[in-house]
Length: 311
Image (cartoon, rainbow, N blue to C red; front, side, top):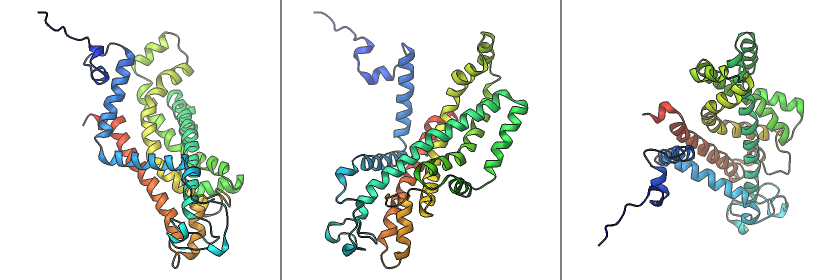
């Protein structure tokens, strides 16, 4: 009779591979770190609620043509201002007889499009400015940070209005205006991280090996700044959405007949007392996606912030 032999670690399943005490490779260590982060994130109930809400909105935007019950642009003045549930209109109709539910689905595409573009442009610009200022120091640091302070001195919406007024109305100009007003906080965070990193021993070792400033910044400083920026980006998404909705409300964002949520609220404000659903439904959509990003940001902060993760 032969005794059963112990199975090697790789045959015990992916969970055992991810929770191994001693990783066998760099890839396994990286995967284990991601897995442990996901476990911490999953234990945060509110963060999971935010993730579910956000995924639901994204799926609604992706499958809007399949989920929409009416054409979001077709007008029917004989069917205007119908209450929710009337004649197959789940959320009612607006002042031009357009289905609010269908316009809400397609409006989610515009909001997510704006959020993605701003999330790509503003943090990258702030990361470049902040790391250059923190690593170079001296008059470069002073010049870049005073330039950053000028942008921080103005309220974001007021500054965005000024840029849109100069560039012209439209989604692309609204995205550019929001990005130009959103980058300063990321620059301050990147500069603070760079100041704590630039005199580290491993930076001195890399410099002694012949690495230039550009390589040091891009290969060794940027990766260490990413986690702080990701947290800030996620928490700022709600403010970006509100700014975009504010521009749309004032007629400086997406132009009619685009179903942008802020523009839908602006159209419904004239009927808010008698036909509450015209402005309330888009307002609830903005509230939902803003709440989702705030909850998600809190969860990511618990996972990515080493001070929070160590508690």
